[in-house]
Image (cartoon, rainbow, N blue to C red; front, side, top):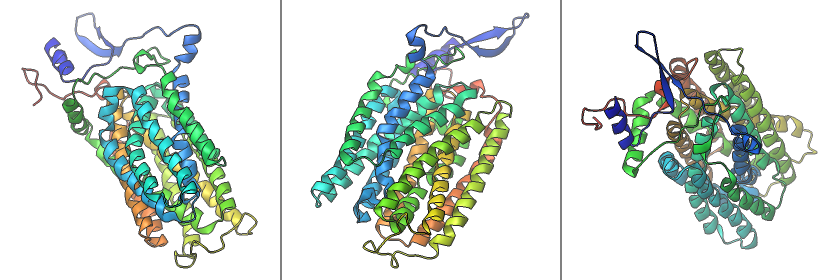
Length: 471
């Protein structure tokens, strides 16, 4: 047994802090986690997992949250959407590649350093939109900034997902995800600020990771320690991606859900908000959309954490809610989308204002789009969190999530840049969301259990040879 554990350590894998309970006849019983004393005094509050997740939320409030505010205005607030669409294509293309390996980088550098590096790209990107307002010919700089942001975003979101899912106990994950998502979306709610204000807030967000507690020192509210992964080489870390797929192959059934999770933004932001509304209406739409996100994340998080309901029942309830919401939103939207095309409403045409009698029903649709988005993202994270509590394994899960999410985003933003018909993008959005849920259903049935088992807690090689090598 000792040789196996030593071999696992050499390969960069580890077991969490556990103890073995033995019966009176000496037989080994189920391994139980060790309980550690929590800090006292002011450190008890500062080191509290919810405090750290709140700080994590403010990092994302001031970085990707403000990015969402910029994008939510439609074309970054610009009249011509082509530059914005091409920048988003570059962003999500590099995001897809970067996120695939970001789990490995996170486990090597640590979450704090990874968050710090990842946040810099948002300041650069927001600064590029300030530059294009001053120098209209600086479109290539915006696109280049988008490509750099894609790499940084992969780092930030993978580190974020690993911490957000590792800090809570199993019974708190829905609440922690909801709290994070609510704070994060406040960034988009303050989208009425100037670009200079955006940039200042984003730079503040870059500094917040420096104030966060080292995950190695964190203890959950139930006294269990947040285990810190050990990964001595890049080769082992890249191999860890394969190990994750090998030890948890059911994650593959979530890939369509991941792929669809950013696809709908293009239709919502450009084909609906930008296409139909003037800048005043778009700004108000943006505000209520992100407020709806806060409500959606908190409400679905509350449901997913209901202790009076079994975890499997909660998982299926979340799936049903998403399925119903997808059809409500897209049947409703279809009756608007069928009445306009790119050709019928050119960029210089007069757009709908908030005083238009048709506006009320259309802004309510946008509110429901925001609710669906938050519920989709929160449920996806919750499902991943139900599969493991180990930061190393979760880093790979969230890396896969962001990689496939960004691949989808790159594809649909490019489709928008080449002026694919609105209806085509709308139908593809609807179909991918339904497909993602259909593929996820058997995974939820088979893989979501009432309690995460010890074998799911760690990222480890399934079997080792007698020499301690990987077969």
